[in-house]
Image (tube, rainbow, N blue to C red; front, side, top):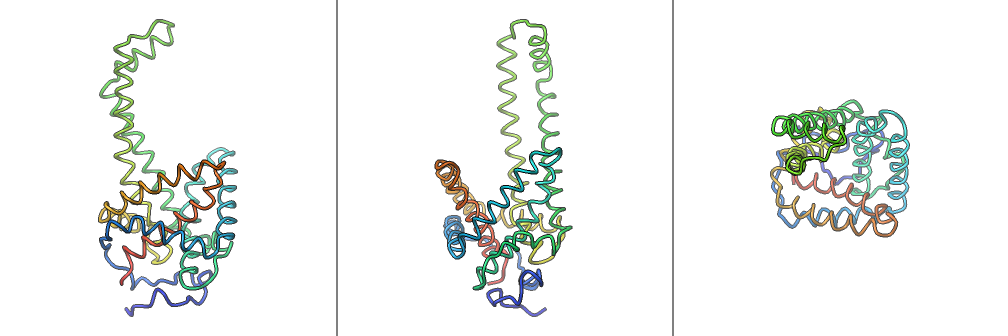
Length: 267
């Protein structure tokens, strides 16, 4: 297969749907630790190329998420739709990266290309959270079911809870949170680059998530730096009545595209 130039101007990302061909996909590379900051900085560079359209797209996405949250099962629908929107915005990042303009239509481009695989990524993400929840609950009851039921019974009967049982349940709660976080991190790693891999290379959901996980696993150091910086920026962004999120969210979305290029595209 002939390799194509990923930096060449695409004919029409909204119609071709796959401007970066599969021949350019490589086994995940290991990026320098400093690229954790570089992904964010370069993502902000893409944001600056068309900030107002980024903000409009972000507001539309926030509005859709908010409205879905008001209806039954809306949060599930929102999670399934999330990689579809992200896949479209990856095309928007590609357009900016190749000298084109970001458009509102990019937000919905995932509904025209690889929609089923993108939705499947969201579905598998939900399934992963469900499995993690079940595992954590089973572990809690296996380790301290008697204490939990004893505390519940005391509360229902109006009796004073046993301090030892209360402390034991609190301890189990901390353990459950730590176990949950340990299991969620690999799931997030599998999701992180999956929308880009599906959109640009027409991979299936499972294949894209496996490749995304391998890419993140090979780049733990830059991701640790990325996560710490993103956390600090998130705290700063929410201070001015959440308005900073209108800059930070597009920047982080664009940073995912930058990281995808660093790790998965042939140099």
